[in-house]
Image (tube, rainbow, N blue to C red; front, top):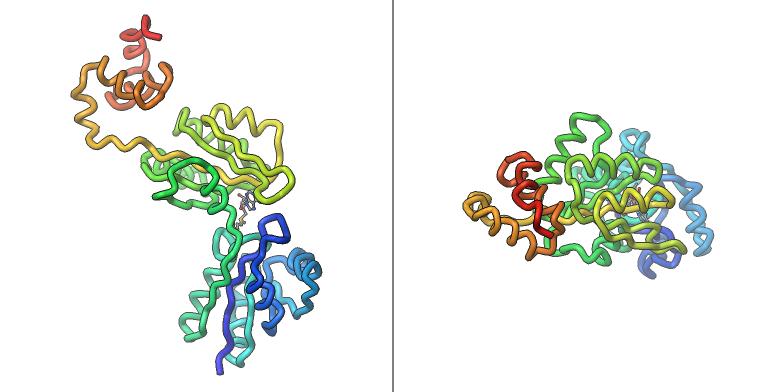
Length: 275
Ligand code: SAM
């Protein structure tokens, strides 16, 4: 009989954020495949679990997947865990899952913590429709294309970022998204958990003096039913449209100039006396 592959979510900080079922599965399987075995050992020790560990990370995924599939075919049950949260979400997992499907091996999800979901649900940003991007590409060209995609999306966007790259990423976001509202969910489930809510400029200031793991949630672009309709309005009506949505004068001028593809200063001149 074939073994089963369990994809087990583990905590993203607070060691108590793990389900009873996850603990029982980790206790019952033959092998635990872990992204960083030393890291997972801390969790296993906390719950008095002793199991053979096999390292399974981005750089050995291709080789190790064959070994794990062999073991599954021999009938051994395997739990896959990553360093934090849900495997396969910006973490190793996808490769072995695809391979296991080919071999008709049963794959069982064991739900639990995931940074992006917990950041989103407390963000105050629209949760009805969202796009999870994970880490932005590092390559300059593909990064720019992705940022432009983000700019156009009317859906909430979720990004992951490494602590030492957060400032660069926010600067890049500012160039394309200007003063879009964002939320930074920092150190979720840990002592210094905090939510920052504001625009990108303010987020840059906020991040200058803080450290930690962060999720960036970006409010979707406004849904304009028909851009042409907006541009058919008089300038005053166009201004009032954004004013009613709660935007400040500076932001409104930027938006009108973008909508009408007219220089910002030209628009500004029309509203110099307006508060
Ligand atoms: N698989 C994980 C999950 O389910 O969320 C994500 C792993 S990914 C390699 C690591 C990124 O997730 C970090 O750079 C950060 O953006 C986010 N992250 C992980 N733990 C976090 C936490 N406690 N607070 C905020 N962000 C976190």
